[in-house]
Image (cartoon, rainbow, N blue to C red; front, side, top):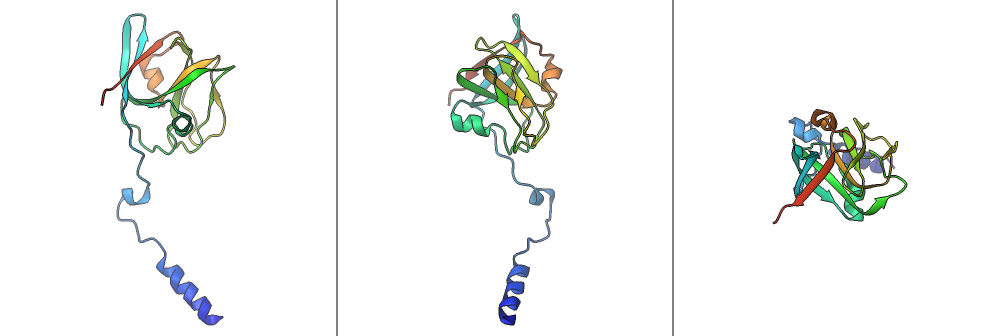
Length: 162
């Protein structure tokens, strides 16, 4: 019995992590962005801003979204594309999402319905559209306000040829 306890103590002491030597040793690496296109925020005939986007257009990519992304590059976001409008409304939450986001909801005609601004990281509370949404854009918190987005603005996007 003493021998087993001694072995357990020796094994446990050898399993501890070494002292971190830098900040990167203490945090997981962020999932890299897979830039697949460009998205423009449009009001009338004016383009307000264009960002690089990753596109979530399958069940698995929509479910993962920006979860576990500790860093979001500047002028980058994620476009969620649904086959049909999410009715009566789309709902997103922030589980496993360490960064505050703005979640923008767009109707089938790509017109902005509403924005869930400055979401709470890791929250399980639903952030919902105020009507049927077929497209959703997630960007770092504060981007929507800095662009000056208002309901009625539109999005256009194109896929990058690789």
